[in-house]
Length: 212
Image (cartoon, rainbow, N blue to C red; front, side, top):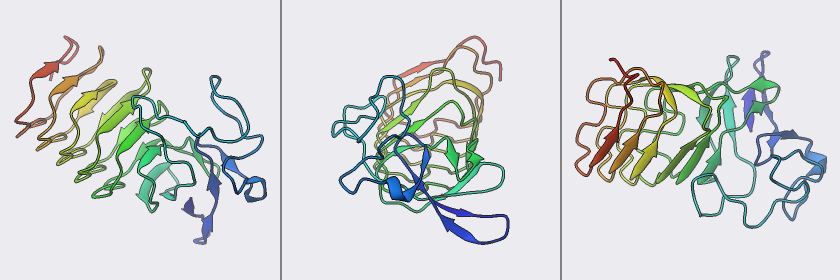
């Protein structure tokens, strides 16, 4: 992960697949970080070959991804080549709170898991990610999604959203493969033209809590 320190010096740090910052000396060249903490349902030790991202049966890419983050904890740029992404919890001591404008725009990512600590997805964050076919959230998440955030994600067929405070204008515009959209109970506002030109869209479930 590449980060910009407060003194203007760019630093390279290492993050395991669970979002933990690790000491480079502990990296196992054959994969995994001995002793790294893992979710409760995962063993510690080396990365499992069949590690999966939530919501997909495909294998998660094992390795280190490069992110840039600002002082507010918003990821501003992704410089890596991994196509299966788990948003990290912490980058060089900075707690990640959001995904910034155009952070992943026009990249080749195929799947992304967005944990509950991410409460903001900026405008155009995933715009033009034409290979993106899976977006998953933690069930306890509450997010605000910016304008055009997933526009032109033409491979995305289903999206199960957490509680959404507001989803921006044309957020899923021109997602031509999108057939199903489910909003969690407690969602509040949907922007103009949110699903414009989603020609395959057949099912949209909107709770009564959405009043705008």
